[in-house]
Length: 166
Image (tube, rainbow, N blue to C red):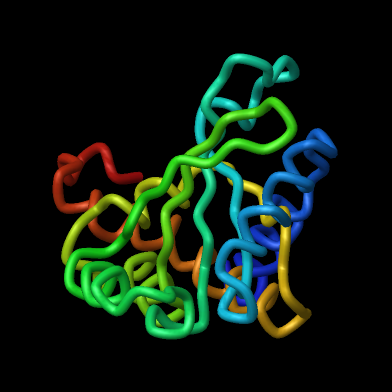
């Protein structure tokens, strides 16, 4: 399968509809970090739920860079050294937590160059792009997420017995 086909499939999956309250919450998360906010992804067990009340929604906020995303320098430093920073959030009766990653870290952590599995493993599963600052941000996220599935397959393949690989 070509990279373009994977990106098209990922783009279609990321564009699937969600409860309107999820999109509203994602926009509210983005406001917390102003112009640094580039995109918000919704993922996790709540993605498949119809009843969101009482549940903890999971988001990733993708920012242009950490320095622009925070008023406090120490938060930017912490996020750069040990990404991601994670914050609780509430909006219109719903609860969530959101992790913050820069565009560069998100792209790196979805690919084979990642130094841990937490991001590519998460985004090799279904997720939704529920807010984007613009089309360029949307395309950057699609390109990054499109790396996650192939990364999972490439890194998991050595653990599969040779006779079972077909």
